[in-house]
Amino acid sequence: MTLAWFLQNLLNGLSMGSVYAIFALGYTLVFSILGIINFAHGAVFTLGAYLTYLLSVGQFGINGLLAGWQLPFTLPFPLALLAGAGLSGLAGMAVERLAFKPLRARQADALLALVSSLGVALILVNLIQYLFGAEIYSYPSDVLGSLPPAFIFKVGGKPVAVRTVQIVLFVVSLVMLAALAWFIHGTKAGKALRATAENQDTASLLGINVDAFILGTFFVSGLLGGLSGTLIGVSFGLSGPYFGVAYGLKALAVIVLGGLGSIPGAVLGGLVIGLGEAFLPPDLSSYKEAVAYALLFVILLVRPQGLLGGTTEQKV
Amino acid sequence: MLALDDVTLAYGPVVAVEGVSLTVEQGEIVTLIGANGAGKTTILRAVSRLIKPRKGSVAFMGRDLAGLTPDKVVRLGLAHSPEGRQVLARLSVLENLELGAYVRSDAAGVAEDLERMFGLFPRLRERQRQAAGTLSGGEQQMLAIARALMSRPRLLLLDEPSLGLAPIIVEEIFEIITALNREGTTILLVEQNAHLAMQAAHRAYVLEAGRLVVSGDARALMDDERVKRAYLG
Image 1 (cartoon, one colour):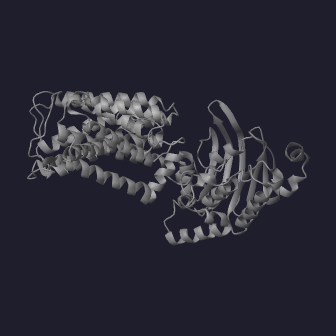
Image 2 (cartoon, rainbow over the protein chains, first blue to last red):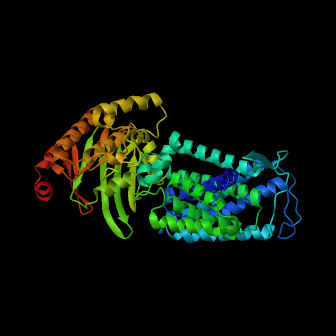
Image 3 (cartoon, each protein chain N blue to C red):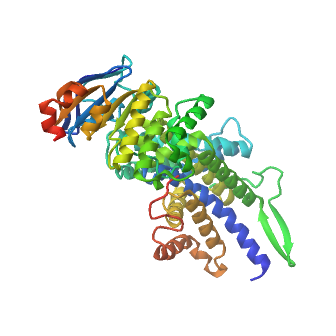
């Protein structure tokens, strides 16, 4: 229980927690507008990770339809990250048009979109498996170029190591959070988005193109999903087409823990779960995946509305 | 300016309004009166395209509105202050007003109109930083009207501006409505308070169970037996 031990776990926890936060925000944004969970979010996470991998490494391995196929170009990692995130945003828009809009246009029960988004998720994941196979992919060690793999400093004579990837995770997530906060609270479009989240009829009577804002929200949500997939992928590798599903469930725990529909809640929930996992004693590390749900269980016993969920649900 | 021709409106299988034709000319206050459930609000919702007519056409400024979404109709110069006030409760009073001018890009004109609204409704100025949901009913009604005016509409649709308000505030709101009209805003007013509405309006349409039963000069209709019997008591 030294200071170095504490700092090390704190850094690990903040880095992972910040990614959980932006991933969970993708759920929160859609929930704010449509009042429903987009179950395809985890699949878009996988898609983003695979696209960025393809764009930066140039090829996938031995299985799948595209085995041995080589992309005619590769991009440096930062560019591949941006391109992968942008394409994931487009995938998010496709999810809206395929799974959500047709049901909305028919004024179907909003809950039905849960099922249709789950369907789109299955199609996406299976398409990825069909194309790229089901094996694990890891980024080459020089993915971040000439940057050293880690920075080590000493605290009270003990070493604390920060992997460069962890810094990337934290900085990218922080930039996304700041950009999102600025957009929602500092721009005219953000104001219109908050109006749309509160009441779509009223928003449209003010001249706000509600359909365009819904589509835009799915773009941002998909972008956050693809970005988080890439960040987790570059940190731990891509453990198969289904790895987004496991993280997707964890991010659901994050938003419920933080308070459904609350943006600060998603951020706080992400950090709480990230830190909870980091501070798990080493001899319990095989239970790491259970931490999120254990925390969720305990917190919901005390605060059923989540950490920052109000009695009247707070949106956007 | 506004023309409904043989409009039939329905929610699913339930027909709410049948075969209604009405017009609003430039510079008029026209009121649509009728008992609760007669279809008044439904007609306004059809004009701003929140619902699509099952039959018939709605034209604004000589343009058929078929196929347009509500936000496009706002851009043609129509503002709708909906029933039940419908302020954006979690946004501040100021943000509500600013969103009223969402379709405008003339910042100077918007700032000027904001001042004008604060002049008309001084209480909104005092409470501009407050969340709109914390306002009293009368203040929310004022905010809903002011917000609709922020788009500088050619035609203003007002749905039940007196609903649930104290008589003194109702009087204040109707004074503002007639003042706005004198300044050139055309108004289609839906009211349950028929007496008040007919005093303010030039012309009136009386709706009963989804059909127009009488229409004509508002002052003349006040003495009409059928209107008296049905709505004025």
